[in-house]
Length: 443
Image: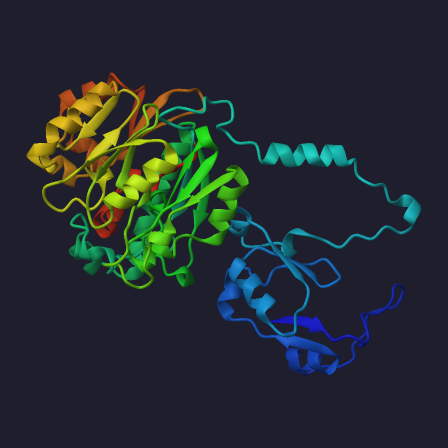
């Protein structure tokens, strides 16, 4: 519930007056109306996500930390002021929000008030916005900063189940929804801890039940970032539930870090996945960022026309190929790191194999072949990142790691400083995606 004061009505007690009891045993909203307030009734979910825990800074100006709440208040006929919404997700995890973090302060006299040093304030803001990547070269294959979305309302997605052969319905049917979320959050904590403890910077978000985004744990599908042109890209997603993952709070964060936006979501057809021309981020595109080559396996989620449009915008050359079997994303059968590539060659149609392999070798990659069984274990769904010491780290799931032969581990250890793995099986089984799908790179 939020209150908006009617014009001409009495205000709060003047300074020096004492608060006093005027009524008791009265319903609060009725009391507010009786003393001149218009009441904006808010849905309970906006209280649960701390949307109502906003700041009123005077003159009908509000600062909120939930975009849905901000929109709801702004549409009310009782509100005619200004609303500024800010990103506050990390602090909300401490079970409070804007109003909880502030206190009213009044100077006893004007002489005792000292204006803060504004230059000092601007320096503090600049330091807060400092990117962990700013000292790195603009053109590089890997990064030391990633974005993760905690699976706080994770579930098996009936839409993506239509074309994702890596999803296992049995895994979801033998557990309650609460057990699935709990297990997914535990697996995600393994990955998050692994990255943090090994010196990788993480920007963390989470999602709520009202977002209705069961696959939100895979943010790499709907955006990518590119330091060399100071740009982030928004991608057309095949299914409506995945389109809803493009939340304002995350986009606002990306806008604070990158000056340019390329928005390809106009290829989507609302509520008609079959008519949408999809290109699902670095799930559809496996990038050689140094040589500007984009590898793409054609599928219902990777449209050739959109690949060509993307390459024209980004200055890349496309290597598009067809696959055998149910490969819904390129990154479940191919990984490209700084000096090596893990590829399920059997998944590529015979007439395209030589062309793809030659392109990888020409780009300076040692090709490590994965079997179909290893592909199903999501061995190819790994990602190379770097830590704050500049060391290269190959990150994968425990299932993927244990599927490797001793020779494959040796080959990969020659191309990276560390190979790390996290137990991630519940997310792999229920959602059909692995560690790489869960990591969105911030370049």
